[in-house]
Amino acid sequence: MSNDGAQIFDSGCVSAGNFAAAGPVARAQIPMMLCSILPPRPEEQKWAFSVLPPPRFEVEIRYKYLKEKTDVRKVGLLSDPTPYGQLMKDLAVKMAADFGLEVVANESYKQDDADLSVQIGRINGAGAGAVVKIGQGGSTVTAAKNIKQLGLDKMILMGTLDDGNVFLQAGAVLGDRFFFPSPDVQVPERVPAGPARDAMNEFLTLWRAKYPDRDPNAGARAWDSMMLIAKGVEAAKSVDGPAVREAIEHLPTYQGAFTSYSFSPEQHVGIIKNPYAIGHVVNAKLAAVE
Image 1 (spheres, rainbow, N blue to C red):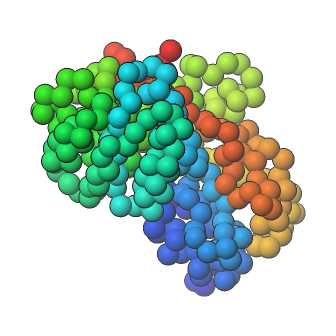
Image 2 (cartoon, rainbow, N blue to C red; image 1 turned 120 degrees about the vertical axis):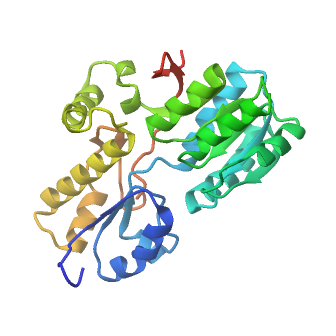
């Protein structure tokens, strides 16, 4: 901000890093468009807007699937130590009873752990029929391998929002016992013709031309964050921080590539409708569960 004269802050999905930046950015009265949960302090939240789906949506869609499509009624949580992970873990504990489920084990791991068999063994020993994974990256593949290595032939693994390559690897290990919350942009074929499909295709055409082998999930949210900033600047007719912040709060609902966003002075988390369906891996491709 001091060296380059930055007038807006658009950042990625690492909540802890965004929390660290939030104080000086808010004091400079610069709007923040974040792909993470909002910072904790009200004076920072005033300047922060999130394009990350609220954690409860991931919990809801996975619990709903377990309740309606399986016989599993006891689950074990396996979570990482990130702020987002801890928030989702607490929600998963609180919400389980609403879906007729019981959390019988609550295990944690470090993101660089090379083996999760001890935690998964304890989850199995507690009687859980599914591991609800909370945390991104290769640890999901590690969990899938450990479930198979331990011979847990009926154990289901419910992944978290992640890159499609992680899903493909975990699905290759566990087959029809691996599921995950999937935004439409990961399985665009399920979206009917209309504004949502048009907005998605505008992004995917450019994305696939440049990154034909990359999953579009995170890229779509980054794209949407830039489009929302542009809309705010256009509405404010200014790049002045307070003016842009107020303009973003009063934007009409915006249909993005990932989903639609609705901000207000009281609502700085833009995704207010659950954007997920349950996905699985079929013939080495991501697909929606019918």
